[in-house]
Each structure stands twice: as C-alpha cells, then as structure tokens.
Length: 195
Image (cartoon, rainbow, N blue to C red; front, side, top):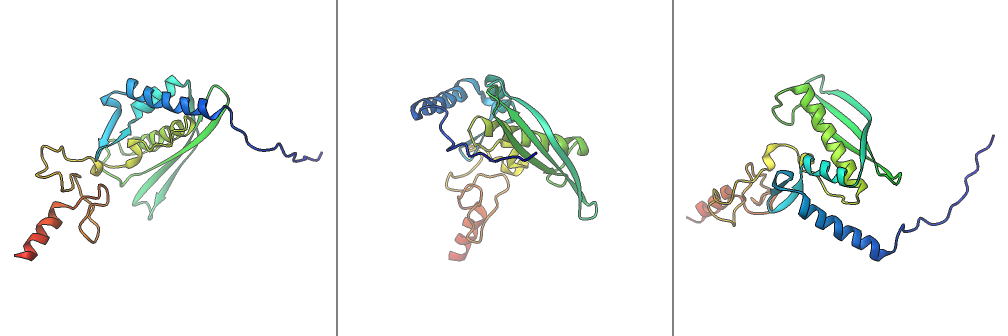
C-alpha cells in the first residue's frame, strides 16, 4: 500500500487577529489576578513564574501533562550525571506541545541527589511545555538554575547603580552579565586606580 502526500494548503489562523489579541490580553490579566507572590520571583526587576504559577495556568486552561521520554547520562566518567526529560502538554482542543528540561547533578548542592536532579529536570520540562502550549514563551524561574540568580534586596545594596546580584558575573569591563550594572568590586577597583 502506498502513502500519498496531499498538500492541505496554508496553515491558517484559528481565529480573527482581534480575537487572538483579546486572548493574550486576558492571559496577561489572568496572571495579574491569579498568580500571587508565592508564584513569582522577581530577578533584577523582571518577573519569572515559578512551578506553582505554571500549575495554576495549567489548571485554568485544563492542560494535562505527561512524561514522554527521559534519560540519565553519566558525564566525565561518572563525575556527575544529567537527567533529560521531555514532557507533553495537551489542551482540550487536541493541540499538544513538547517541553524539554535537563538538570545536572553538579549544578548545586542537592539534599536528595538522584531525586532532586530528576525532579528539577521534570519541573523545567513541564513548565516549558505549559508555557509553550498557552503561547506564552516565557522562561520559568526553575529554568534559570541555581541560587546565584537571586538578587540581594535593595535595602542591602549601597547604591542602585551597582549590581545587586548575589554572585555577580562580571564581564571584561566589570559589568554584571546578568543585570548589566557595574559590580561594586569593579567600581572600587576603578576608584583605586584614580588615587
């Protein structure tokens, strides 16, 4: 039996542009009304939705998820390992997306190494799948990785001109690669050269 490929025409909009725009506006309103402080982390004044927030979004849109593939790989002769998971998100209209996520055992200190690395990879994949299926495209907080991304509260920083990241990642010019502000160490070094 032969299989014939039949062209089906263009991929078309499922609704008028105005209706799609209204949907995205409603989604933004939903996030403001439903997601609480416990669901969002602000990093350098940019909000990132945590797992709990993506779970609320999945519930509101009646989205189901399931793991479709997982793998564990030993790296560098077993010095550390990486879990990779692929999670499918499915909407009531039949639309599906796949989100992928990975976590390495050397990213940070884990309390329950095997479980926590697996769970982090799963969370990253699931949040990405949910974000993709609702058309958000947002990066979840869990995808950012380790604790180094948490900023120091403004009350602790001496000046808002300086980088407020817990562990600044300065470039060659002394600017933090995360927030773009100059690190306090670079500013002090520049002042010392002027003396």
